[in-house]
Length: 559
Image 1 (cartoon, rainbow, N blue to C red):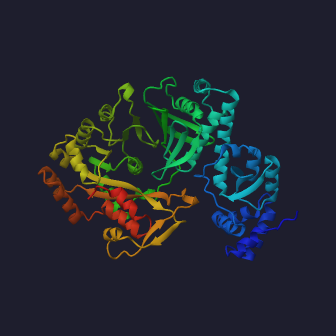
Image 2 (cartoon, one colour):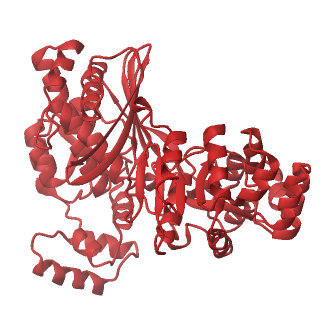
Image 3 (tube, rainbow, N blue to C red):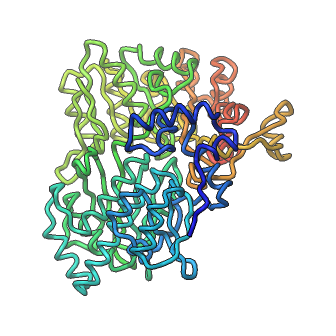
């Protein structure tokens, strides 16, 4: 039966993405690179983006675009196409509609692929569109799951037998059992997409895998419950935990190369009513830091920080909730300080990044090495600068203060809502006000705001509540509806927002005199002209970087 031939170049010209002259350029390029299809040539030459190509094809062919990252792919459908064929044509079966096999492709004009799919599956084919990268990731993960399920069915194993199987798995990268492939796929997927944490959660009828990206916890895939035991067992072995212990929480860690990626992962396993739940946290990620050369700050706050770090001694705190990027900021500061001829030492739990020319020590509570003990030991190492990963208790706070007063620059983190609150927190931990005044030299409060996805962002009129928050001069805000590029969340990436204060002589006098904290807030506002966290967030809203909801989320309960 004759087919109506649709040419990609004609479609793109019709929708105004390229010109006929550019099509000719791409065809000439294609002749020199005979393994490239026209779409690949156009993208490599920078004439179009993949999103533009798929948008044009979706309109012309009346096809649906599917965000594979969040789509509930059916494993039984995946198995209808051999993995080798899926990799050859970069496609994957994702479900069935009636007697049609639904297949995701990024090149729906490849009729050879369509014929081969019909032949091997014995079904009619319905094509949907997806990005090349999303299909490649889906192939790696979904076929690993198919193999794991097949192994379970073939051996008719129960959970205990699976655990015994997992106990025999080697840590080397060449081990290609189904369970290893499945966990490796999760780790690679998480690492390459900037995920901070992977959650493996057992429930009564399913095993849910979720991933936290840009601060949001997103459902990634639902697995059959019988895969729970081998996945947890493999995680325990990889992270050096006791595979036989199922009643108590366990912590573990591994540094290993998986499929060419050097990973540094911390893991925690806890018992729940449906079995053990694991959380794996990437200590090194592929996420990039905007303006890393200025500590991720705007110029005003960066210059304030440089002034603070010029102090030869004193305490500097980075404050904020868990996951606000405090440790990353500390590392950026330490890297700047090591450019001087000084001795820098750290005590951390855990060491999240290996830094050159810095002596890093890791907390080991089982062996008796706590922050307090480690900090005392570091003071005998002739340090100029000491970094304490977190000030958790009164003893650590008091030793840090004494270290600063005796001539050391101490950098650490605290959990407070804003910069000024660090003063109250130090006093709450038993540090006398005059000691706070004589040791504290600066505080940086930090938050990570989610950035609106620029692909699905749109302008909107502020609500009355938003108008009151933003001021009468703001007549437009931005929101995002969600698209395949942002996993349908409306956000893509994060940006740091800071509030920096320096402790000057007037503030020292106020702290020593135990003046009301509101007086200190007022002094900072009137004399240091510090941009507050809320002010920094409102600036991002006015510039269309984030939305008003982020201001409310990140400053809830703050002044």
